[in-house]
Image (cartoon, rainbow, N blue to C red; front, top):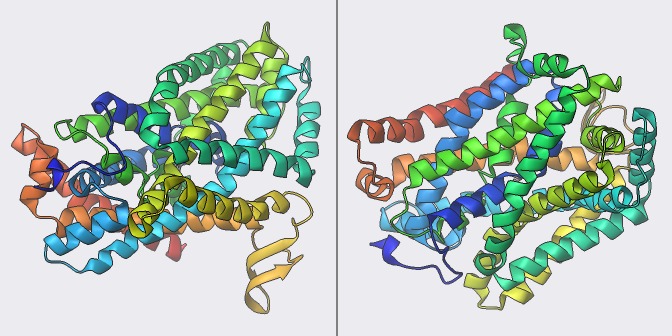
Length: 467
Ligand code: PFF
């Protein structure tokens, strides 16, 4: 039986460590930075509602599928899919799905590292007391000055990539556990402190209403964006969870573990949203401001509360750690694969891949300043162009990579993993891996993976195309 094997890359000490690692992967910039700004851009409640539906109906089934596939195969996602497909009498070409996921994860890392670098800059700024008593306008100016400076961005981006590579090169299992045990709970506590501050702004209900008001007529508006974000925030569709599943102990229950990770991740995002929006409204800021939202809002909050300097510094340290544990999981599938394939050392493989991601990330660095006019995917009056300098429409480099990964590659990868678990693996294999005591519950989960979740992904794609 495949799951008796142990991965050559390591094994988590217990189910708890897997929960920590998977939560470390899931909770990151997606929850604290991206979720609030996307909610703002897509107008609030309707987006949040679709996001929640996608998490539970599609995202968690994919996480379950990835974990069980990973644990069954015990190799890098590419080789796991290849081996299991052949074992099940299917085509080895299934491994291409994992290959695509691997590339998607590296592309995500390229811009993730740049944004994580912003928090490095904010740790220094907060620590120096640069934001004391700051107004929303001043905080906006400070963010603008940071993103306008390619050298400063490059410095932080480089540093963050080195940090990520460092842990990966030593091996995730050794590197992750200790840090996560302390940092994760601390991040949550500080988010609650922020939430407490939000409640004193006098705009808490406005923020609450913005996040949770039901707008049935707008449900379809940001549907693909919401699904893409649900995938992004859970780290599914790329093989990150699959590779962590490969290091999972054999007897741990996958169903409850995945549910725990999903609930924790959702809680962090919702608390971050609830903490941020009242501050946005109290400061007269624009909820749809885009990627700068968190970096403008938080300094205002920390700049105006007691012990704000210390708490703000600590907060950005924790954001950094959350981003760090996520980016580690983006690199791991490719590192595991190349180590298996080439037999070279983790250090060498990691260095090459990190350098590659760093290079692509420079595109994102420049897209905030001197390269802002470089537009991709331009639908102009004279038809479609892949690239055009200074076009009115189209997306800059950062937006293009974000769009390509979250809205196209992640859903496609997720769909492939669902179909693999639901239709390629034998029902008995899935039953054995999930080891659910209640047969009814197993059937429910199995059909969720086999039919409901894949249909969900397809419906969202088709709806988007017809809009
Ligand atoms: N889930 C991470 C976040 O919300 O910040 C982002 C992420 C991690 C995406 C790992 C993809 C991935 F493979």
